[in-house]
Image (tube, rainbow, N blue to C red):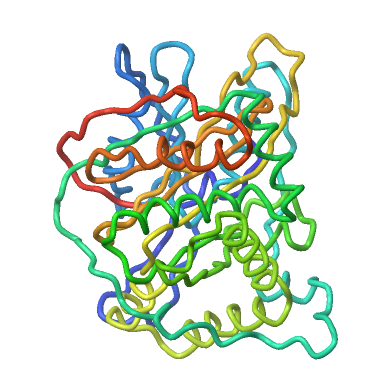
Length: 374
């Protein structure tokens, strides 16, 4: 495959202070590949989420072949995000079909990509945001068990109806999912205030769809739980917030903050505090969008594509991955306890689109033992 990071490891020998920044180093070790038989792939995905990559230099990716027809890819987030992982999955099938892939160049750095963004609208400045977005969540770093992975598939007709209604309401599928999932969480009565995170890939904002670097920004949407009465108004609010956060002033501020943090000398406490604040939210929507096969002529084809599947260590956090493949919306989530979140989201959205809420196609797995990780 042509991703330059697939044969890299991270070298970090610093202990108390990162006096020398961690760097990528080339390793000659092959990517770990395992085979599993008779186990549902969501169970394998949960087990893989719980397996940390060793600190010894070796590739930061691994693959599990489940039965004879399913591949589960696991990546360190330092080398791949949801979109690049989906591309790697497609390239794997291309190689299995006999195609040759040319190596990609080393991707551009984050600060270089920012300068390729279009200029902001006249008078547009970055918004300060609600200070409650910076409140630290309660994190668990102990062994609390492998996650429970559940999935839900929408039919093509339901997916088309959702897209049609979103266009009519001047919103996006991501905005609608954010509103519906926030509505479901608000209905539990356990949240007075909801922080919803929506990541984005900086490369794709500048039209660099071939890059594999992980330059990820984050959109933070703050909602009082009693301000979600209108689903479509909430969806439009989410969409407006997402669009603004992807414009030059907000991206500039985000990158400047990371650059300042990195250049100021990083001790472990500072790094941990920054990571905890950045990952303190009640809900994350990571939608890699509508994807189509790049090569559908070979003997091996991708019938279904799921992901991204992520897991943080904040208590009570929900992370939902979304992908539309061959016209069908597929949702997946990993949590520490059984949840019907995906089914409830579907039950909120379908009636709002004018379609009855049906049974859907759901798959899940029971919780096992182990250690969760992102």
